Image (cartoon, rainbow, N blue to C red):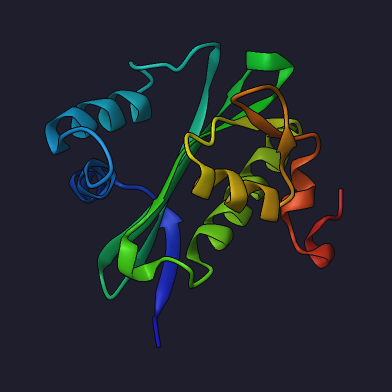
Length: 157
């Protein structure tokens, strides 16, 4: 059984996150620069606001997944899920869904209820639909109220 813990990112996690991200696209160096710039608010997605967060999923001191999000005004949304990845051997174990719930709570704490995401591929699109997102436009999806991504007992205002 897995002993997965979830926490905010720290500087020592950046290399692990870059490695996870580079498996699907780009290089570790590219992602190191992007992730560091994102955390330090030096690299900003379109219409991103300063508040942002990255959470990691850790199993036995190894980063096995991460999720990043920020406040935004893009597409009249209040929040945007920027990245989410889980290492292949830990996929389909509920880790991504748990990270999404943790990020959803962060958005709610920041009064960001309408949250957008660019799924990027059909696997991600299915994951977001399963977790309550709907179509925003040809490429993007959204949660009109991110509380729909939470279990019923967590949807309190």
